[in-house]
Length: 115
Image 1 (cartoon, rainbow, N blue to C red):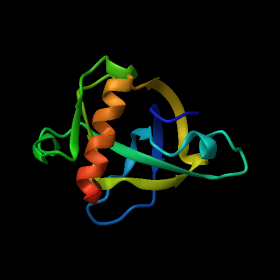
Image 2: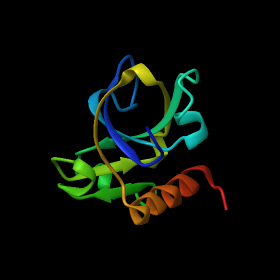
Image 3: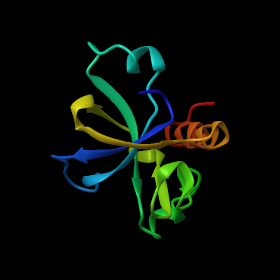
């Protein structure tokens, strides 16, 4: 597993407005963590297919169906970055291009006000 990989994950349990259920996520944690099987935590950005989420501004990154192995138009919700146990990652579906990963990084910076 590496930074930019797209997996289907089980996001249970969650609460409130957090994304939940079985859905795609993008791995964004550093590859040194991702390659260490003893490091159980993986940092991810969840995806949504909601058209409303696409209007969230610079923290929402559009991914088209067919891109990165996705079957539906999706939105990467950089404002909902979260940490999961790697056991919650169920199926590898694809990987982002370097250009799209750069857009995700910009979305994360906007969400966290990082220059």
